[in-house]
Length: 443
Image (cartoon, rainbow, N blue to C red; front, side, top):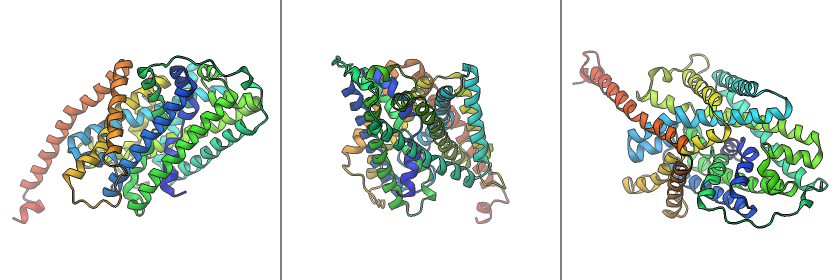
């Protein structure tokens, strides 16, 4: 599998497939609906990957969505995205994963709730320090953990399907239940999209991908398809040994399914594998996420200290440390479901705008070289963009408190943008009028 595809798979698979099946089953309350939301979530993710593949091939620069939004809508929209990446999307993703780490750790150790929180924060701190030691150190840890997490999923599926039937399925299939309603399915979709989240992170490193016009596009599409297939198969495996009611009541679905299949040792082994998997996804966010605020600072549109690069390790140390601090704070104050709702609501505002940028840029720059053109244009980008809008609206209606905080962060970026824009212009004017400036001496 190409390196980019492995990066996509590694960025997506974290805690979602191990934890969200419970909330999805409770909300959908129907086996057919459960698979429907997983399939639709996968389809939407694929539409996003197809759209972003065109953008990544046309603009192979570090920063990903930040670059796409800047080209399509201007610096202000890009800044608001970067602002949310720094304050919500990346630290919120890390915090959600850290909280999931704590949930599965209780399978191994009988910890008090406060100890679970402190342990989760400690993991964030360790990964933050690892990534401050250089890109090679962080990348090595990322590659190792990605290999383990893929192996863990394959092993779980194999055991649940092929181990001797434990008799758990003899409880029978639940009677048909009424359609849960579109609003309920929308809530379940938020959990599914959290499980698929991370597919876009490969675009952050587009400037470092060899032959991005070919490798980035194929990696996005292949990696996304592999994850969709894995997720559907894993859900089938869960339902092979657990009823829908048991899945709904479980906070550790994978662990409970493995324990049912091969006894307590199965639950212990899968808990260890999941902790490693979650750590890998956390590390991916710590590794890639700080690049966006770092790029903003270098554009003089953010705190200048965030543009600091460590002279020995050559990494944006300040950006990494601040991301770790914010993630630790969110871990301390939030629950798993609160956190992923918070991240998905804010993130999908900009993910939808990013897909729509495919259409905007086709009209704005029709002569731009596009090594890859999105399949199904303009239907695929439109499907993704309108679906993103529907998800955001549904979350706003049904989870108003988390949505309100998310919107507050977005709008708080507006005065910040104009403040830094004014400072950047003042700095540029100062250089232009300086008798020692290059521009002045050339006149």
